[in-house]
Image 1: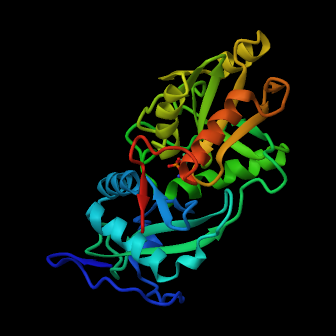
Image 2: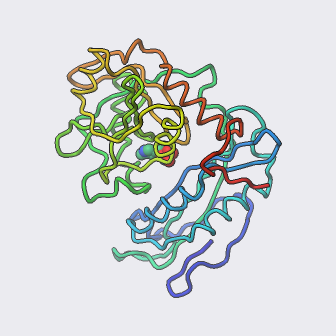
Length: 322
Ligand code: PMP
């Protein structure tokens, strides 16, 4: 779907997947007005297909657009575009277990010009790819690197938007994590380098017995839809679920004294991933006994059961395509 200043959204079309041709002076290549979303369609027990909370993705896409001085795509158009792509060939949606069809809606500037200003022409597209179960051989805890050198986002910056630049800025820290033998980066706040924010592509939860806590939305972390869903699902399961502030010292101390029983990360791609070990310049420790915890696995099952139609959708989160 195209957007042009004065004309608005127009010319929605379904076309075969193919490379795009881009002018060297395309404004996106220079000034990075790009935003995207990630969501999944799951096969339901009766053979139909449903997406999980597409309205929430549509809303976050609008919030990202406002922050990046881009036009807002109406939620109905966002959802209809995703539905139309899935319907084109719903055999794409895997038929079993945790496998899904991953959808990637995105928007970028198509105007040609070298002046630094918001572009006047944009293109919104959706592409899709089947995604297997994230953990092929059973759920495996990840190791994380607490990044004290780099920050992902600052107050007033673009941290709460899903824009390409945030990910570009994170790659060097991800490489640093890998060089320390860790799977993922954990980002800290930009002022004190102390408060836990989120991971490279996932939000975090800290489990204190039957109370789970996730870092509050400070404006510099992404408001994850999985994070938000788990606040509700955890309460449905009888846990106390809250937003709060957790520092690196809290994490290490509470793990040592045994009050912090589990830590997990959550996001559309991996659903829920246990955190098994933590490293920073100053310290390294095993989280709990390094194995997936009971609360983590219960929440993971509840969320996946809901998404795959094996648990009642009491919050109206599933969007059936019929
Ligand atoms: N944080 C970041 C930086 C992410 O890229 C993602 C993935 N979209 C998340 C958190 C998790 O968000 P969601 O649950 O909506 O996938």
